[in-house]
Length: 581
Image (cartoon, rainbow, N blue to C red; front, top):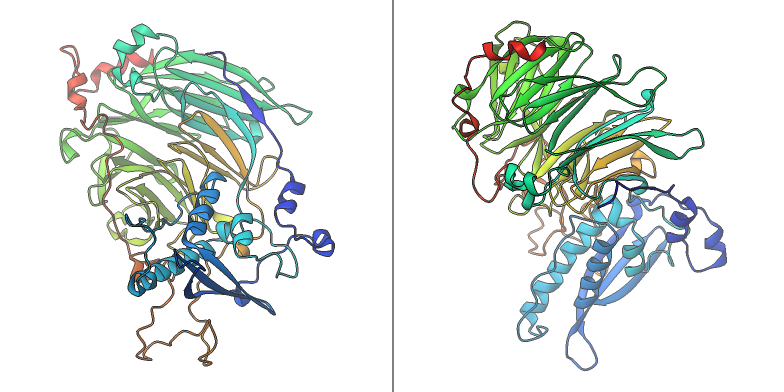
């Protein structure tokens, strides 16, 4: 078992440069540069049999700048390329069509179909910023040997990793001004789902809290650790008062403070707010703490006195008795709380009074809402396999809220993955999304299709934090199901993170391998794939919703929060008065 381990390593820019080096001595000396998408063209032009006629090879014509060349690849070479990309943390990749039972197809129709499938895969790989600039794709297409200078890789690079391999990450707060990184963990293995029965076997290892600080020499040091006998479900940190709140599975919220000049926390109080039900979400501001529980109750607490200022149960507003509260957003400026549910609803409440006043409900087509984030006057909602962007209306105008767009990763679909987390980089107009398979996608606010999909973790990216500036940024911090918190450096300029499409590169020369028919030409030749086009169901400003597996189910069965009640429990809020003494 042992204690949590910590490893960190600064990314080597020399290594990144080597990935883009060409073979000639002159090109080795040239610094990596951005790819000029305006001069890039690629097309699978034809298929021809190999010498023994056992299979076919596919001819790929390419042009970049003033250079033009051709490479030939077999179907198996594409398979090798995709495997190499997956092994190097590129995720959300296209998939090859299934292999035939009788060996490689040789009839004309089958070869034409396979050629078209390979063309779409090639366009997908060149369309994304990360795969387009990857060493694997550049080598596959012999790109570096025909470019005037090496191309800079745009795959995010891992900078540091903070790890507790016993548990998955359940909460993450990063505060450079306080020189603190806080993370909580919970056991997410199948055995832990036995709850208190399993805790009898392993009573001391179901959750953990860790605090890290950066030392003067640049290294990182863990200054505090505590292991719990129950799961740690949520975490919130308030920088002004230097308090942080730890939500536990038994319904308690532990309150810690970190004195100025000290890095070790002091436990101040334990609030019992949720009738022994898990604390599913915490958020705080300089005024309030918002707490949501599995018992369908919301509580707003004064951040300094820890007294209840607003609260109530939302059971009657849920679609079914099996639904519960999953996540929230505290709009402290306008005295509102946004509360997401497993049934796909978002309740907007006025928390300036007690009990709270209901304002409006947003319906997300029945898909569980896993996280919300407000940025750039927009409400980002993670649910199913997508992030839906909605207008963030002022108080009393909630009914005017409308869907503005939907962001998806083309090859991460709802029948296989669920999006669990969302954050933004407003200064770059980027949106980040974390998936249940460990992937992290990056979108431009202007595009519905992902620019980058990184294999950041082994599973469940539940936490995302973007830091825009020094001393710890610009960097993206991610927390995964294998227990790691990793910070990522995003190389290159914002302009380099763009989608590429072969459409629009028309030629009137019938002998030009890149010639493509214009719209209305009457030709039946298939058009190249446009990433994010409405024909793909991914229009940037058309809200779309896909089917989804419910990530909140365990073993295919939902748990009714009311089954957690005992004879001593009540739906009244009067019984929580003693929690603040």
